[in-house]
Image (cartoon, rainbow, N blue to C red; front, side, top):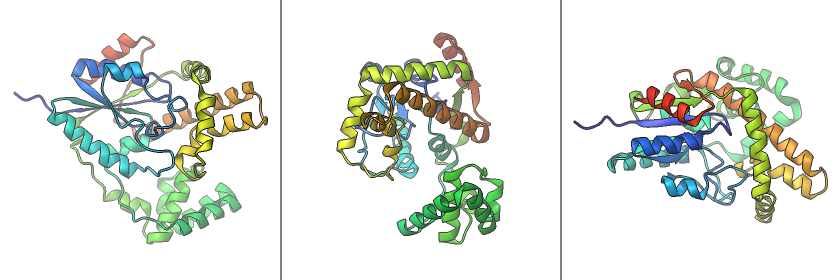
Length: 307
């Protein structure tokens, strides 16, 4: 009897130990790992994005890591097309795909399908961003609700990115972003997915983030950032928003000390982790929450949920 095809999805906040667990799961299930982290797609930045190291890649095959230039645009739509092909290929070869990362939107696109919204002109996007900057998020959100009353149910008043996105979609298409959402569907049957989220306690996560930031600097984060600056990457591109890029630049320009740089990166990473938890609460209600400080115990819990 042919074994039922499955895709293991492993999410969790940054520094929660996803990569280690993914390797153990891949070894157990005869699997290969596929990246679901929007910052780990870039080839020029490895230390600041905590990409899997050479030893990890030797143990298990990893896909969709470090293949895109920081100078190029890369969207959730691009990722989804690539990941669907990769899953099909691994299945064909009798392997179990294990999709691992911290980008909630990637997972949502995979499990729920991606909203097919027409491309919005750069001119309009720039105008809307200027308006947002001029009046601030509070007033902008009020304008959004007037323009698109439906967005009140789906957008948090403090979510700047989503507010601007909902505004530009309604303005450009005259249709609410959330009407487009209703028309989406996944490429896969939902029972295919085994969804796990590493629900690590906050206090422990904060300690792990501090350790990771220290390790980044020992591994050469400053040199990596210097190389990045020589590439003159457009500030609007996602790669420019990698945590550490701006902070190290300020340090190199003597605006802040090394201690302050590390503190700022740690603080921003903690804030990012908080947003990942918030996303999980809102969009990952059907996911299995697992945690143990012991990797072997965590692995056992994961196996129980998958089997």
